[in-house]
Length: 360
Ligand code: NDP
Image (cartoon, rainbow, N blue to C red; front, side, top):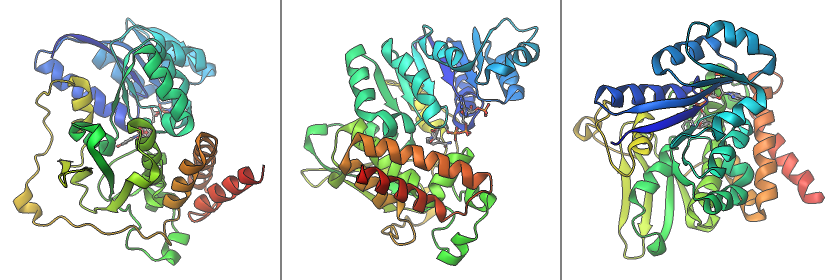
């Protein structure tokens, strides 16, 4: 890998910290990676630790009221400190070759757009950017010559095997099924935030963990795949695959089906995005097919998990509906995590919001 400068939006989160690990591993192999900017929501302890490890030029805390606290936490380090929406946007706009977009939710849109508008290579973990602003985002990337590299494991898998986009019959996204795959509706009705966040395969932030438990995450990914790869809803299937080893399939017109496999570890798609179009050694656990024995697949339960249909319907209605869906879901998940609503209310609230929108 040649030398490159990078910025990491959402460096204190799960994807952000996996990115830090990948950078450290590649630096250990001799890669010259400099860090231009990093951003945090509120976790100053992890931000300070990251700045010590990566020596970025610019570090941002999302809350403008905490600027002096951030300066204090980063004192002694040679780093410029910024805060608030302007700081976040500046982090995306500062000159770097590669930007990891890993802020959770719609808050990631503005800083990621700033990177897109200067034609950067953008590694896209944040799926809400595309769900909220898909057509605008794709148009801006094309206009400014920004290269989008999907980091969501399913989209990264498709990207890796999408050799002939014009010869594709359909895509199949795989879904782990989340923590309630085999639970009854009664159990789901009483689920606590901690139970909803106990994902069987992936260690992730709390918002995406709840989205995985409702299967909203897979619906958001369906929308993301449609905007990113340009396929309509009818050409994208979802299959539950509890082992989370096959990260998605591309079906071609000649009957061939290509897939990418790997252990469920985000350092694999992050490493791929950081070294693309090359590949580098990443020390993740290797896939042992003999030990796995079997890979299983099943159709999603659409009664227990109505989110998939909500997302499909929103995608068919267009960008206004997918934006409304994403916003309603983000607010409902926050309310669930704060203990203000129950687990099954999340999809009801999203459905009600879309019904209100339809009446307008
Ligand atoms: P986390 O919750 O672990 O991290 C979120 C990051 O965003 C943190 O750095 C957090 O800061 C920051 N943040 C939160 N709110 C704001 C805000 N209002 N303004 C600025 N920064 C903010 O999430 P994940 O890393 O799990 O996920 C990040 C994104 O990647 C999501 O969009 C998710 O859907 C996507 N993704 C994640 C995967 C995973 O395996 N985790 C897999 C595929 C996609 P702080 O912690 O300092 O408050």
